[in-house]
Length: 125
Image 1 (cartoon, rainbow, N blue to C red):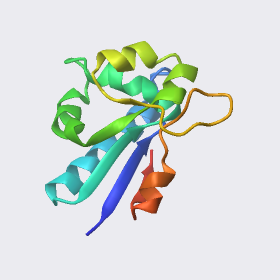
Image 2: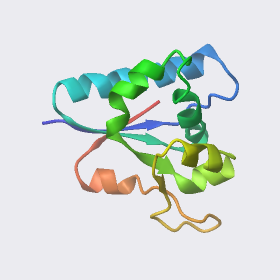
Image 3: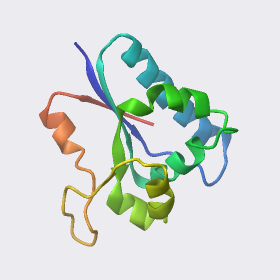
Image 4: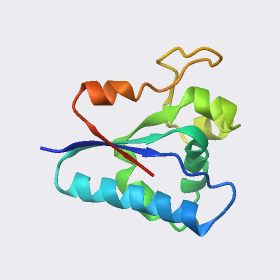
């Protein structure tokens, strides 16, 4: 059985089609793996921590797809959200802000290495 951690780094702020395309592809993959009843976790990391606040908007083009996979969202990197100014907006979505791994100069980050330790393939968008 495949186990995949899908990490979304793309930044919605510039509003480019490329960023939206990366997001859609990440959510498509999560949807496909979920349909196959495989283990999948979506992680918002780096500038990608800005996406959750966009995805909860009913008029966002990826909203329906996000709603179909939001139960497999593992979390939002807390330290990244802090750096990219997304902390408060991410909190409002109800997603978990994760500060589990202490890294110098940050309040902590979501520890992606844990997924490798547990046999997940990492897929980045």
